[in-house]
Image (cartoon, rainbow, N blue to C red; front, side, top):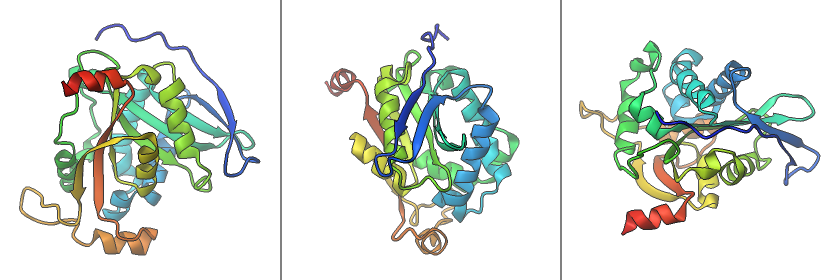
Length: 252
C-alpha cells in the first residue's frame, strides 16, 4: 500500500451544547486505548444496537468483528475517542476503516463472526450499491461505528464528534467520501444533519435470506419492547461527500 499521510495527533476540548457543564476532549484511537475502546463499542452494541439486541448478540459475537475493525482503525489512525474531562471515562467513539486498505488487505474477522449468517447476508444486501472504487488510501472511508456510552445520550456528542472529525481530523478531513451503513435511529439523525446521500434502503422485516426465510420478521415489535424504538424496520446505506468536486466528477 502506498505511503499514508503523516499523522499529527490532536486534542480538541469542548462543552456540550445541550449541557455546558459537561466537558469533553477528543483524542486519537491508538494501541494504548485500543482494548478499552473495543469493549466500550461492544457494550454499546450489546445494549442499544437494534439488530444486535434482536439477535441477542453477546460480547463474544460482537468482539469478533469489532476488535479487528477497531484495530485496523488504530493502525491507520482513523479513530476518535471522546473522553469525559471530569471522570476520564469514554463517552463516545468514532471508528472508520479505509476502503482501499481493506481492498488490498481484507480485515480478518475472528471465527465467531461466521455464526450469524443472517446478519451477514442482511448487510451484504444493504451494501450492494457501489459508490466509489478507491484507487488509493483515503479515497473512500467506511464509517464503521458511532458508539455513545451509557449516561451520555442526548448531549449532542454524536453530531459534535462526527462533524468535527470530517472537518478537522488530520486524515479523515481529507477523505474524498465517507460511506456508512446505518442501523440506529440516532446515527441516522446525525448523518441527516451532515447532509449525507442515501444510496440504499432496506426493510429488515421483509428481508429474505438465501433460503427464502424472513429472519427479522418481528423486529419492529421486539425493538419497541426492548429499546423503545417505535416503528423500527429500515436500515440505510449512504455516502457523505467530503470532497464535492469528487462527486461532481463521478456524476459526469
